[in-house]
Image 1 (spheres, each protein chain N blue to C red):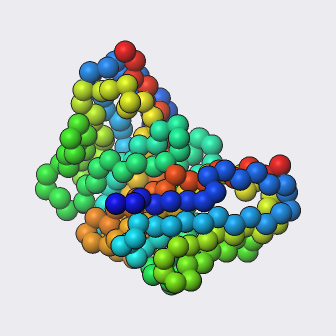
Image 2: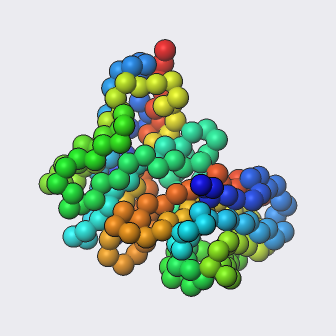
Length: 114
Length: 115
């Protein structure tokens, strides 16, 4: 059973550049989530997809952030015009529904904006 | 609004001893789920244990058990027979069972297990 995978694992970019991250969920999971984690904090929710529909978005997700899940499988998170405050770990999770609906996380993408 | 509070920034325990990591929560939802995750230095969040708000018994998963006290709104994680590999950050999280799917996390507790 393959877990959640994320690519790239690390990304260093200059301020003002655009970056895109990819997440591949566990194959049978129809729910996908993005979180952001800064140093010393717990993850903070960004957005949630059920199949290809984006059903929840946090106020943290400014206009510079956009997420897609075009075919209900993998998802991408794009950040435009990156700022130093965007430096964080970006975590993706997936779940398959049910009573517990446990979210399983990928290894994360660590973004550093110089 | 939902809130998770973890008041212990760091905990130390000797190998083979038991340790309790504290978690209190606040919610007005009648139905909710509580989760504990482990985050090693590699960064991946590893699911440990789940407790539903209507579950009558405390959850257990191997060496992990959840001491759920609903009236006190606490969901403490107990790790028995600590191992060196248990050294990591531990996060308590909550999800409402009505409406939103997001997990709300606490700030975490860093556990160090010494030989």
